Amino acid sequence: MQKRISTFLIALVTIPCLWAGEKTRPVHTYSIVAFDKSTGELGVAVQSHWFSVGSVVPWVEAGVGAVATQSFVEPSYGPLGLELMRAGKSAEESLAALLKADKNEASRQVGMVDARGKAVAHTGKNCIPEAGHFIGDGFSCQANLMLKNTVWKAMARAFETTKGELVDRLLAALEAAEQEGGDIRGKQSAAVIVVKGKSSGVWWKDRIYDLRIEDHPNPVPELKRLIRLNKAYNHMNKGDEFLTENKVAEAVKEYTKGMEIYPDNPEMIFWPAVTLASSGKVEESLPLFRKVFAMDPNWTVLLPRLPKVGQFPDDKKLIQKILALAPKKK
Image (cartoon, rainbow, N blue to C red; front, side):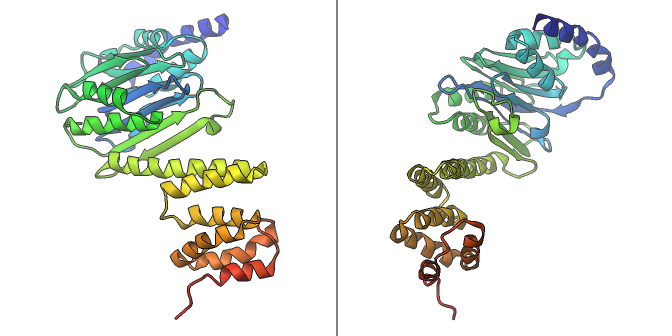
């Protein structure tokens, strides 16, 4: 481990030559990096008047840490910061090493938090005002080119006082920034990434939320809408997992939660109905099938196809009984 860290830090010495000659991207923005003490989850949320901010600023890895790199952004702070924290360095040590190797650190703004909940931030003297950061217990808020110098503190207050999942608290910080005036140029894109507290070794399985609004007149409200949908599908996915384990009651419970969050999506209703009918709870399934068929008649076409692939009982009477619920064609 020590050899790996030393080798990596030696490699950083060569970075100034690369960074000094590169053109930087002016991703002026506000963001938050955070650690959830109760779950171990790590996350980043960001908004900017810049296209596709989610492809540049946020970097997160389960069990390792989170990084937001912005202002005259150097994207490599993300993967390099995570590599250092993965090798055992704290967020503070990792950021210090990167800044020391960067001749343009005065133009950088970076927030980091490690898997122990230690947060750190840097706002270079050449970041365009209003610019600053607030380091709290397990999180850091940072912003530059803001209308007011109160944005990052407002973000911190919102994060600290909001209840719910980590993603809810991150979103609250973005909303608070907007209410405080936000980016002096306006708004364009936003993103949020939240990962599990412990790595599974497969990064895509560790991502609980991974949403990007590339270009939108109101990116934060749109991000909020997608988070709501993501929550619903998280419950649906858990339902599917329970179903594969033949835990029908648990699956129905998760499906029901998904339906409650996103009641206007027929698919959120159809698969719970299928699960209920397949497990013998036909009468409970009928009101759900009726609602789905009223929303979109194509679901009546799909249902008879399911027995052929083992997704529904091969019972013609049962299928006819369900299909009879469909609205009559005029």
